[in-house]
Image (cartoon, rainbow, N blue to C red):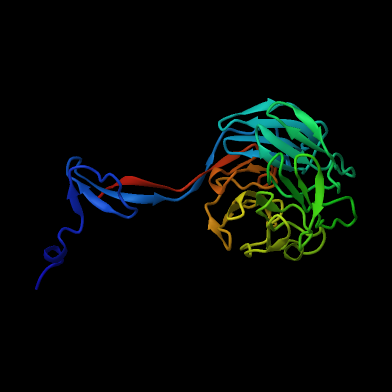
Length: 335
């Protein structure tokens, strides 16, 4: 009877140097180093970075992992207009926002961004918007509906999208209005299918995504916090994949076809994340530290970042960056 070795040769190929372009899963023996090698895919992970300077929850955010601007929020002393800027390594103090702002919505990059809406005090909701050029704020046209708790960062400084949120109605009810900014003015567009606030989002003005959040601040958690997704095509909203859980005060980052649901409350603060591929959600790498209502950003899922907000019981300054999956050559230890 023939052996496998006689038919196929050595099951692990012997070479004197590593292959130039190995395939994922390929295994070989390097006779020069006397090591078994494998081309292996390493899973993505969240990695801690330098701490955010000032504590706050619900800051508006502009940017991504290589440059993020965290604007205002609700600090231990109340509403704040403090701005912390992240350069990909450390935070620094940037120019204050023109007014205190809790839970506004941002879009763009750390050198060309926009913030709109928010809450100035407990009962004062904002309809103002301001652009950011990397060093200072400039007044921009007002949005049509004053509100806070809108989606997280989406769009650019000249093609932004704001949707959802709360106004000062009692009891609170999630808004369904959607507005687009073209660099000159805000215009109302087709409404969300479900009015909601405190959800997660990502994408662009012509390919946006909005998910989870809360429709009101009363009632049982799973009833008021839907696990649905809506996708925007530049004209109207339509249903997307179902999120595997109910979350509010969460963060979103990425694109309509590659987006993270990051942390949030369910109803306790969680460290879990989910990844959306454009049609369905799946569990992804967990945060090292649970966070909700934090700063977050990312031009795509693989450059996502989350910083500050609240941890399991109090404010946190923790910043975590997503390290995307990699295919690399590794040695295999055998005994």
